Length: 246
Image (cartoon, rainbow, N blue to C red; front, side, top):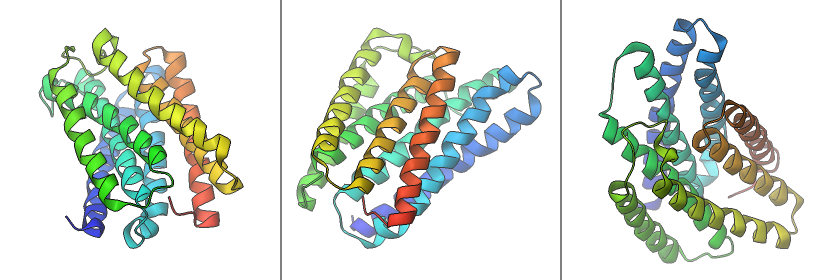
Protein backbone atom coordinates (compact mmCIF):
# COMPACT_ATOMS: atom_id res chain seq x y z
CA UNK A 1 0.00 0.00 0.00
CA UNK A 2 1.16 3.53 -0.73
CA UNK A 3 2.95 4.96 2.33
CA UNK A 4 1.05 8.24 2.27
CA UNK A 5 -2.31 6.50 1.85
CA UNK A 6 -1.52 4.19 4.78
CA UNK A 7 -0.85 7.16 7.03
CA UNK A 8 -4.08 8.89 6.00
CA UNK A 9 -6.12 5.72 6.60
CA UNK A 10 -4.40 5.21 9.96
CA UNK A 11 -5.27 8.76 10.99
CA UNK A 12 -8.91 8.39 9.91
CA UNK A 13 -9.25 5.12 11.82
CA UNK A 14 -7.76 6.70 14.92
CA UNK A 15 -10.14 9.65 14.71
CA UNK A 16 -13.07 7.20 14.42
CA UNK A 17 -11.89 5.27 17.49
CA UNK A 18 -11.37 8.49 19.48
CA UNK A 19 -14.83 9.74 18.48
CA UNK A 20 -16.40 6.53 19.78
CA UNK A 21 -14.42 6.78 23.03
CA UNK A 22 -15.29 10.43 23.59
CA UNK A 23 -19.00 9.84 22.89
CA UNK A 24 -19.13 7.00 25.42
CA UNK A 25 -17.13 9.00 27.97
CA UNK A 26 -19.39 12.05 27.73
CA UNK A 27 -22.42 9.82 28.20
CA UNK A 28 -20.82 8.08 31.17
CA UNK A 29 -19.87 11.38 32.83
CA UNK A 30 -23.39 12.75 32.42
CA UNK A 31 -25.18 9.62 33.63
CA UNK A 32 -23.00 8.68 36.63
CA UNK A 33 -23.57 10.62 39.83
CA UNK A 34 -20.62 9.42 41.94
CA UNK A 35 -17.32 11.10 41.02
CA UNK A 36 -15.40 7.87 41.64
CA UNK A 37 -17.66 6.01 39.20
CA UNK A 38 -17.20 8.71 36.57
CA UNK A 39 -13.42 8.90 36.99
CA UNK A 40 -12.65 6.21 34.35
CA UNK A 41 -14.64 8.24 31.83
CA UNK A 42 -12.94 11.51 32.82
CA UNK A 43 -9.44 9.98 32.68
CA UNK A 44 -10.15 8.30 29.33
CA UNK A 45 -11.43 11.62 27.95
CA UNK A 46 -8.17 13.34 28.95
CA UNK A 47 -6.00 10.60 27.46
CA UNK A 48 -7.78 10.32 24.12
CA UNK A 49 -7.93 14.11 23.79
CA UNK A 50 -4.15 14.28 24.29
CA UNK A 51 -3.70 11.50 21.73
CA UNK A 52 -5.85 13.35 19.21
CA UNK A 53 -3.92 16.60 19.67
CA UNK A 54 -0.55 14.85 19.36
CA UNK A 55 -1.66 12.99 16.24
CA UNK A 56 -2.98 16.15 14.59
CA UNK A 57 0.26 17.98 15.44
CA UNK A 58 2.19 15.25 13.61
CA UNK A 59 -0.23 14.99 10.71
CA UNK A 60 1.58 17.20 8.21
CA UNK A 61 5.03 15.64 8.68
CA UNK A 62 3.74 12.08 8.95
CA UNK A 63 1.84 12.34 5.68
CA UNK A 64 4.24 14.42 3.60
CA UNK A 65 7.61 13.19 4.90
CA UNK A 66 9.14 9.77 4.35
CA UNK A 67 10.88 9.20 7.66
CA UNK A 68 10.50 5.47 8.49
CA UNK A 69 9.92 6.32 12.13
CA UNK A 70 6.63 7.96 11.21
CA UNK A 71 5.03 4.57 10.52
CA UNK A 72 5.83 3.26 14.00
CA UNK A 73 4.69 6.40 15.80
CA UNK A 74 1.45 6.70 13.85
CA UNK A 75 0.75 3.03 14.63
CA UNK A 76 1.61 3.57 18.30
CA UNK A 77 -0.85 6.47 18.53
CA UNK A 78 -3.50 4.37 16.81
CA UNK A 79 -3.04 1.44 19.18
CA UNK A 80 -3.00 3.74 22.21
CA UNK A 81 -6.38 5.00 21.04
CA UNK A 82 -7.74 1.48 20.45
CA UNK A 83 -6.60 0.53 23.95
CA UNK A 84 -8.96 3.19 25.31
CA UNK A 85 -11.89 1.17 23.94
CA UNK A 86 -11.64 -0.71 27.22
CA UNK A 87 -14.05 1.98 28.39
CA UNK A 88 -16.70 -0.13 26.62
CA UNK A 89 -16.49 -2.54 29.55
CA UNK A 90 -17.40 0.23 32.01
CA UNK A 91 -20.14 1.37 29.66
CA UNK A 92 -21.61 -2.14 29.51
CA UNK A 93 -21.59 -2.33 33.31
CA UNK A 94 -23.35 1.04 33.46
CA UNK A 95 -26.03 0.51 30.82
CA UNK A 96 -26.14 -3.22 30.09
CA UNK A 97 -25.49 -2.49 26.41
CA UNK A 98 -22.67 -4.35 24.73
CA UNK A 99 -21.14 -3.21 21.43
CA UNK A 100 -18.65 -6.07 21.19
CA UNK A 101 -18.79 -9.71 22.31
CA UNK A 102 -16.68 -10.02 25.49
CA UNK A 103 -14.13 -12.30 23.86
CA UNK A 104 -13.67 -9.95 20.90
CA UNK A 105 -13.15 -7.04 23.28
CA UNK A 106 -10.47 -9.00 25.13
CA UNK A 107 -8.69 -9.91 21.89
CA UNK A 108 -8.78 -6.28 20.81
CA UNK A 109 -7.37 -5.16 24.16
CA UNK A 110 -4.55 -7.71 24.06
CA UNK A 111 -3.64 -6.98 20.45
CA UNK A 112 -3.69 -3.20 20.85
CA UNK A 113 -1.47 -3.29 23.95
CA UNK A 114 0.99 -5.75 22.41
CA UNK A 115 1.16 -3.70 19.21
CA UNK A 116 1.52 -0.42 21.11
CA UNK A 117 4.75 -1.45 22.81
CA UNK A 118 5.94 -3.36 19.75
CA UNK A 119 5.51 -0.18 17.66
CA UNK A 120 7.40 1.90 20.24
CA UNK A 121 10.18 -0.68 20.32
CA UNK A 122 10.27 -0.61 16.50
CA UNK A 123 10.53 3.17 16.52
CA UNK A 124 13.50 3.00 18.90
CA UNK A 125 15.22 0.15 17.06
CA UNK A 126 14.92 1.97 13.71
CA UNK A 127 15.66 5.41 15.16
CA UNK A 128 18.65 5.94 12.87
CA UNK A 129 17.54 3.61 10.06
CA UNK A 130 16.22 5.03 6.79
CA UNK A 131 15.45 1.75 5.04
CA UNK A 132 11.72 1.74 4.37
CA UNK A 133 11.69 -1.88 3.25
CA UNK A 134 13.19 -3.00 6.58
CA UNK A 135 10.67 -1.07 8.67
CA UNK A 136 7.77 -2.34 6.55
CA UNK A 137 8.84 -5.97 6.93
CA UNK A 138 9.49 -5.52 10.64
CA UNK A 139 6.05 -4.00 11.18
CA UNK A 140 4.27 -6.63 9.08
CA UNK A 141 5.95 -9.57 10.82
CA UNK A 142 5.38 -8.01 14.22
CA UNK A 143 1.69 -7.45 13.50
CA UNK A 144 1.22 -11.11 12.57
CA UNK A 145 3.13 -12.25 15.67
CA UNK A 146 1.22 -9.98 18.05
CA UNK A 147 -2.13 -11.00 16.54
CA UNK A 148 -1.22 -14.67 16.95
CA UNK A 149 -0.33 -14.10 20.61
CA UNK A 150 -3.52 -12.13 21.27
CA UNK A 151 -5.70 -14.88 19.78
CA UNK A 152 -3.99 -17.87 21.39
CA UNK A 153 -2.86 -17.02 24.93
CA UNK A 154 -5.20 -17.89 27.84
CA UNK A 155 -7.17 -14.91 29.12
CA UNK A 156 -10.43 -13.88 30.75
CA UNK A 157 -13.73 -12.78 29.24
CA UNK A 158 -13.43 -9.39 30.97
CA UNK A 159 -11.49 -6.52 29.40
CA UNK A 160 -10.76 -4.84 32.73
CA UNK A 161 -9.52 -8.05 34.36
CA UNK A 162 -7.56 -9.41 31.41
CA UNK A 163 -4.19 -8.35 32.84
CA UNK A 164 -4.85 -10.29 36.02
CA UNK A 165 -3.86 -13.43 34.12
CA UNK A 166 -0.19 -14.38 34.26
CA UNK A 167 0.26 -15.29 30.58
CA UNK A 168 -0.87 -12.03 28.92
CA UNK A 169 0.73 -9.92 31.65
CA UNK A 170 4.09 -11.69 31.30
CA UNK A 171 4.13 -11.24 27.52
CA UNK A 172 3.21 -7.57 27.81
CA UNK A 173 5.89 -6.95 30.45
CA UNK A 174 8.53 -8.46 28.15
CA UNK A 175 7.49 -6.37 25.13
CA UNK A 176 7.12 -3.19 27.21
CA UNK A 177 10.51 -3.77 28.84
CA UNK A 178 12.18 -4.08 25.44
CA UNK A 179 10.55 -0.82 24.33
CA UNK A 180 11.59 0.97 27.54
CA UNK A 181 15.19 -0.28 27.38
CA UNK A 182 15.61 0.78 23.75
CA UNK A 183 14.25 4.24 24.60
CA UNK A 184 16.70 4.53 27.49
CA UNK A 185 19.59 3.66 25.16
CA UNK A 186 18.49 6.36 22.71
CA UNK A 187 18.17 8.91 25.51
CA UNK A 188 21.73 8.24 26.67
CA UNK A 189 23.13 8.85 23.18
CA UNK A 190 20.81 11.63 22.00
CA UNK A 191 22.37 15.11 21.72
CA UNK A 192 19.39 17.24 20.66
CA UNK A 193 17.56 18.82 23.61
CA UNK A 194 14.26 18.88 21.73
CA UNK A 195 14.60 15.19 20.87
CA UNK A 196 15.45 14.36 24.51
CA UNK A 197 12.32 16.16 25.74
CA UNK A 198 10.24 14.35 23.13
CA UNK A 199 11.69 10.96 24.10
CA UNK A 200 11.13 11.61 27.81
CA UNK A 201 7.55 12.54 27.01
CA UNK A 202 7.06 9.29 25.11
CA UNK A 203 8.53 7.32 28.02
CA UNK A 204 6.08 9.02 30.41
CA UNK A 205 3.22 8.18 28.07
CA UNK A 206 4.46 4.59 27.91
CA UNK A 207 4.65 4.26 31.71
CA UNK A 208 1.39 6.12 32.18
CA UNK A 209 -0.43 3.85 29.77
CA UNK A 210 0.93 0.76 31.53
CA UNK A 211 -0.07 2.03 34.98
CA UNK A 212 -3.54 3.19 33.95
CA UNK A 213 -4.46 0.23 31.75
CA UNK A 214 -2.63 -2.77 33.18
CA UNK A 215 -2.48 -2.07 36.91
CA UNK A 216 -5.90 -2.26 38.54
CA UNK A 217 -5.35 -0.05 41.59
CA UNK A 218 -7.17 3.31 41.64
CA UNK A 219 -3.92 5.02 42.71
CA UNK A 220 -2.03 3.56 39.74
CA UNK A 221 -4.92 4.50 37.47
CA UNK A 222 -4.79 8.12 38.65
CA UNK A 223 -0.99 8.34 38.64
CA UNK A 224 -0.80 6.72 35.19
CA UNK A 225 -3.30 9.15 33.74
CA UNK A 226 -1.32 12.11 35.16
CA UNK A 227 1.97 10.75 33.78
CA UNK A 228 0.31 10.15 30.41
CA UNK A 229 -1.01 13.72 30.35
CA UNK A 230 2.36 15.26 31.27
CA UNK A 231 4.21 13.12 28.72
CA UNK A 232 1.68 13.85 26.01
CA UNK A 233 1.86 17.57 26.73
CA UNK A 234 5.67 17.49 26.44
CA UNK A 235 5.53 15.63 23.12
CA UNK A 236 2.90 17.98 21.73
CA UNK A 237 4.69 21.20 22.79
CA UNK A 238 8.03 20.07 21.33
CA UNK A 239 6.36 19.08 18.09
CA UNK A 240 4.41 22.29 17.66
CA UNK A 241 7.28 24.58 18.70
CA UNK A 242 10.17 22.93 16.91
CA UNK A 243 8.40 21.11 14.06
CA UNK A 244 10.29 17.93 14.99
CA UNK A 245 9.77 15.10 12.51
CA UNK A 246 9.40 11.75 14.23
